[in-house]
Length: 232
Image (cartoon, rainbow, N blue to C red; front, side):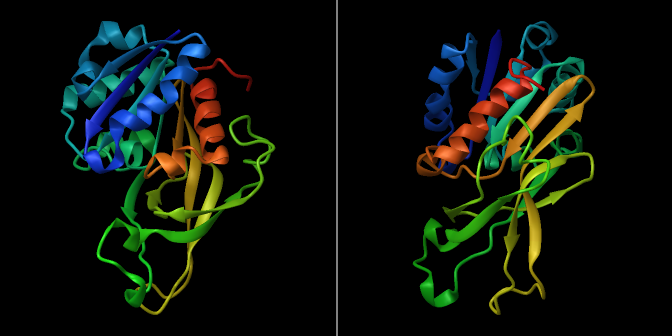
């Protein structure tokens, strides 16, 4: 089994440290791990054809048409794709083809009340719940996990109906934000693209969140499920 870790982009999401957190898990499960620091590798058809799992961890940045087409072609042929937080859901903002592939795009992370803000990244750390859907309670990626709460960035995600949502989070409608009613966003979803499986986990802003037992379980199970080394 071969895993390709593609990491880089905005350093605030710790692409090196976060992917290294999961490298031992991949190796224990029989993966030979290759690391690249650019999506250029996606355009290499031979490399992609030999890859069982792509772990995408590039926040923002850019991707060329041939690179995103190489990724789409590989996933359609059966390569798994997974990632967390901005490393997959806030990547390559200018590429609609990438957005269509992963099925969800970060739009915002609503903030604390103005009087609680300190002027740093913690202004967007709000306590929120992740609730599993009916599908999520039986899907191999999330089965047996209970609803839980986090205090970190809560992703507001733009999404489509091709994804199978395993967990959701609901954004409240406090008076300091302009929306008039609570809004529910997918927090974890899976997606079939041709013969390939995609798993997106939106929590994961920093190592503390990635070490949360439920988040780590979801990501690790997602790696195995996307690469078809786990059961249906």
